[in-house]
Length: 71
Image (cartoon, rainbow, N blue to C red; front, side, top):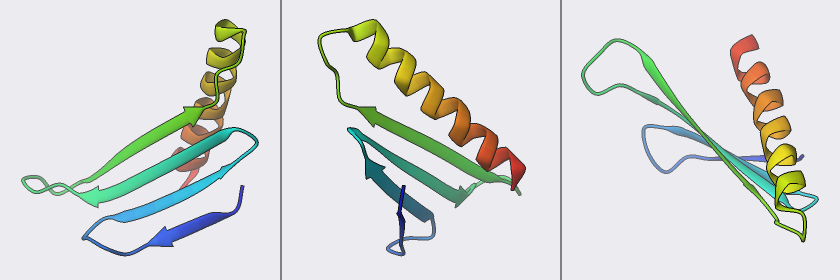
């Protein structure tokens, strides 16, 4: 997916989408601890087969988590 970087806060916000799915990855510093916090949101279009849509969202989440962990 092509991604966009939006700079509107102290966080890095990456958004991307296509093929009936969209993602948003937010990386920001913790306000109280010396660490980064990451938030991952995934939205997938739901068709007649809810189980298949959930599997698709889980597979996308697993790929994205692996990509973020490799950073």
